[in-house]
Image 1 (cartoon, helix red, strand yellow):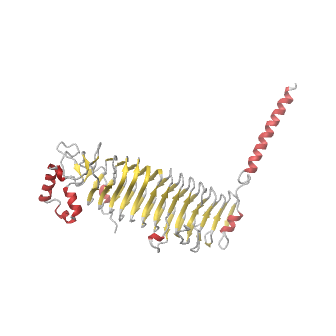
Image 2 (image 1 turned 90 degrees about the vertical axis):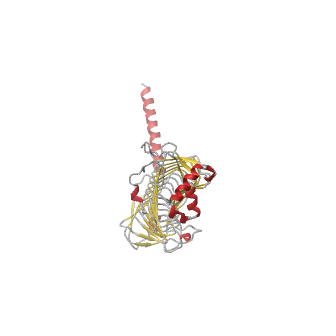
Length: 435
């Protein structure tokens, strides 16, 4: 009979400990277990004052109106614009500065930051530790930097319109989105224009950059010292350069479109162990600029209508280059090296200027394609020779050069040149040059 009181006492003590633990966690939770409150800011009222009154986890809803103020958010809040209210920094400092994790900003027009490049004035400046920030469906205009993210994890910047201080010279502007020393960012669906660089990334890893459109900037993306990232479905056009990947490894670069840029479409500079596939580079000065690139895969890309299709330089070797289309580039390959480099070892590539034949009709040319033959070297040094490219004299010179190897220079060689393009819709990309 004494076991019943003992058993009841044990159950009572266990219930007391569980109850005490639950109470402890409730009291020490960030919001003390209280229900999140909603604060509405109306025209004539202060957003900064509402932020100060709010408790972590609350939401602040801002009615349509024009609010001239600087806002510092140092707690977990959801800031939501109702019918696109405008927050102006009056051309001074940062418009909104963030100092806490788990903040979300949505539906605002944020404009008129200062112009101090040293202070990096921004529409939204994100200090270290602002993890899991979300900036969505927001318009950021006439700011020096649009969104500046410094050392934060799992940031989401999506579906925003970002346009810089268009009246400033390019070198005096900031970048649309700047990402530094961050991990796990998701930069998707943004439209960016009239900034210095559309998306500037440094020392940031495991990020996704998808479906962004960038135009009328210096570099669409300027990207350095970052690894294990995905660039997918982005469009970069009418810039100086499209996508610039420098000093990186383990990238996936696929389904991007870079067209009408005055320098390169896609730059691969000091890059290793990456896959570059299904991209379109059209109507640029240089389609691909490949410099010091090794152990990468380039496949199924459409390189069309560029002044130079691919400029290869500085020991870019050991790359698998397969199933690409090189169509109507004024100069297919500009190759600067001391030895031959073989492309198309498995499937071959398509070259619109291939002058060989296919006797057995298997879809593969019977003689290799060589990029740097005598004709190419002549046109590099004397562009007017292009007027005579298909003349009997020049064709005879090319035949003689193949018979006497001393006349040839190191070249990209494709031993399996395809007779037809891989991309059936290649003609849709003709005429995409910058106007």
